[in-house]
Image 1 (cartoon, rainbow, N blue to C red):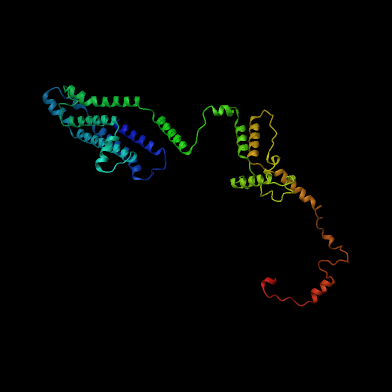
Image 2 (image 1 turned 30 degrees about the vertical axis):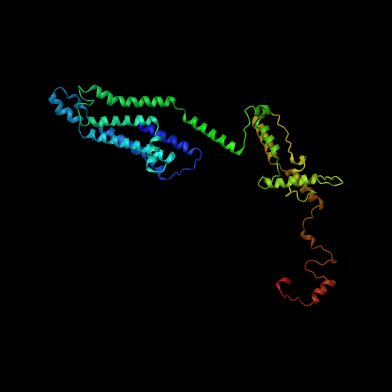
Amino acid sequence: MTWEAVRHWGSWQERQYVDPNPFILRDDDRRSKVEFWLPLWFYLWLWLNFFMVVPRSWKFTQLQHSEEQTLAKAVPGATNTRFKVGAFCLVVAWLTIVFSLHHSIKHYKPRHRGIVNRAVGFLRYIPFRFWLIIPLSAATIAYQAFISWEFDYSIVKYNGNIPVIYCWGFLPTLLILYIQYLYGFFSPNEDKDLIRKRRERGEMINRELGIVNKPAWWHRVRGDHLLSFKDKLTRNVHEIGGGRATGRRIEGDAERDLREEALAAARDDDIEMGHMHRPLDASNNPRSDRAGTASISSNASRTFVQPYTGKNERRRHERNMEAVAGILFPNNLAEDRARREAQLGLDGPPPPPYMDGQGRGRSSGRPGSTGRSNSTETNNSINAPPQQIRSMLDI
């Protein structure tokens, strides 16, 4: 129990130390390796004590009918080597507890310079209950080691010393239990205390940055508790402004600011004649694909979706998601498709398909692809001297 108390206290110190910055400590340093192997080391010696003391024949405790039988059978069985080795294992385990306490104070408490200051700081950082339970656990171990040599005070003696057995053997263990009970009853919950410290750090950071949190009644006065998720999302989009959808569906803040400044400058321009706005469509705006002018007009930047009036909840949810996606990422796919069809129709109908017989029925007034023309340009090109290429620039 003393080991678990010290180990839990060290874990609590680590949580407080790491909570402000989770990356302040490394995971592969000596500290982490010691904390990994230390419990295994402690329980190794604890189990060695158990196997040295418990799994054995206890028949010698019954052989105390006479003084000669006690000296011949009971005393050698109660003070043999296994009890002495078990006491040694407990001593190693107790030293491991002290080392674990020193390890936690060294890594998770402020350090002091100088040997004297370090010793004073180490003693000052030890919790008060450890000043009680660690000596009590040492007293229990000392009693087990003592009865390994002295049979008169052993708990297996038929007519042993009752005050020594109860005051030295059982009372320290009982006091450790009650001390732990009282500490757990009066100490605050560690998780709640950690949440309180996080809140205090957040308030301190907000004061340094000049951030004032709104009171609890602020959201109810504004009516935020009456809005649905879709209404809140739509309001946020209208507050920040839905920009032009680019190739990655995102419009940079700088591009949007420049475009809004240019629009404000154009509106505030002091000219005698007002602006004559032309229809903002893609056919008369050559830079509609880059300048983001589609968002200037409110009609072009809004997406109206017919509300779903059916009873299918899944389809209503899909319709709402499509409406929100249209608000967040507006597009003009239908207008672009109509514009491309109109541009294709301006050049007239497409040319007729190629007919193989058309070349055979060609009139004699126009030479075919294999014939020769007798025009002046043809004669000049034939009679002219060949062109001399002086460099690659003439080609």
